[in-house]
Image 1: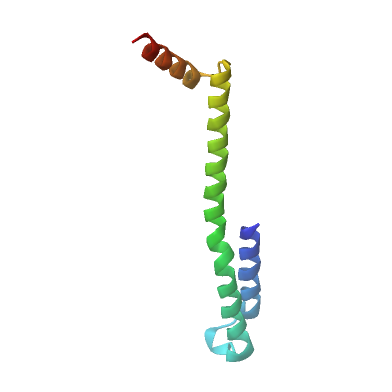
Image 2 (image 1 turned 180 degrees about the horizontal axis):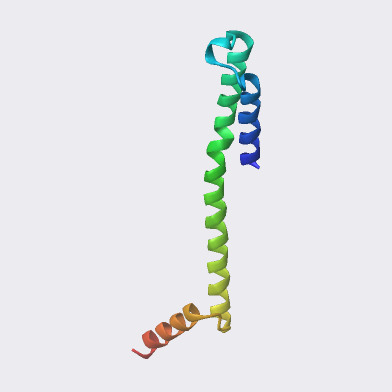
Length: 94
């Protein structure tokens, strides 16, 4: 969603000065609007990768939590569950 907003702001900035040389662009309103839309587009373009990393960490955390919960219930979900149960059995035997 933030990526779409950032692309929209950059597209709007390009529409103000697309195909023109720097000397042909008037200061007001073209140059002002180019810089305005570029400045507005900075915020969503910085937030997009930050929120993607947060979402990825939340999803991985939930997957690990559900795998641990399944191990506690006694369901075998894979190597991690077997590894944890053998480690806990070894500590109980000692």
